[in-house]
Image 1 (cartoon, rainbow, N blue to C red):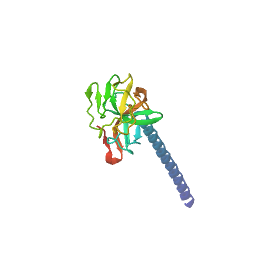
Image 2 (cartoon, one colour):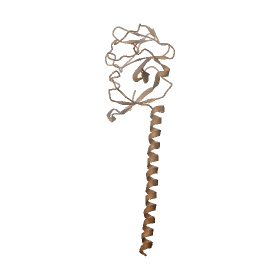
Image 3 (cartoon, rainbow, N blue to C red):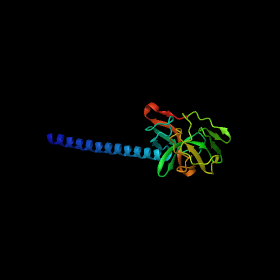
Image 4 (tube, rainbow, N blue to C red):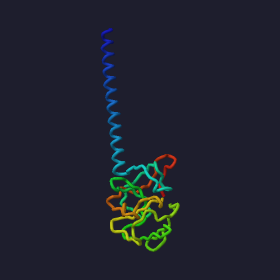
Length: 186
């Protein structure tokens, strides 16, 4: 009897070990798959970026994490993420291809002959500007500016210039962290 019980006990332990290894491998495969799907979604469908500067204050603050959508439909007023010199910049689209804009001495913007309503700007300033105005945005390009007009280096400067369509990563539409600032951008 003892030999039979010992054999049954050994068989039970072997079955338990096999089941445990199967469950462990299954869990690891599930975690790897979930991580891979997350990376693919974040890179190709909804890219995620951390705000590193203050050029978009008060709309976006340094340290916040934002979510983009790969939308081909970019329009004036949208906040976009784009590549510039192997870095990602986040700015607001002020003018689209074919639009003519002028920046007055007090920093206010006129778009196609009308003063632009910009409630997201705290204080208007000409900022770093070597572009000659009035300026017509070339085809397949966007004129972008930061909401913090005094410190933002953007399309007003030849250092950045207008953003080419192919350099646009996507439209920034949501803050995801910190949780206290979580929500859609307006």
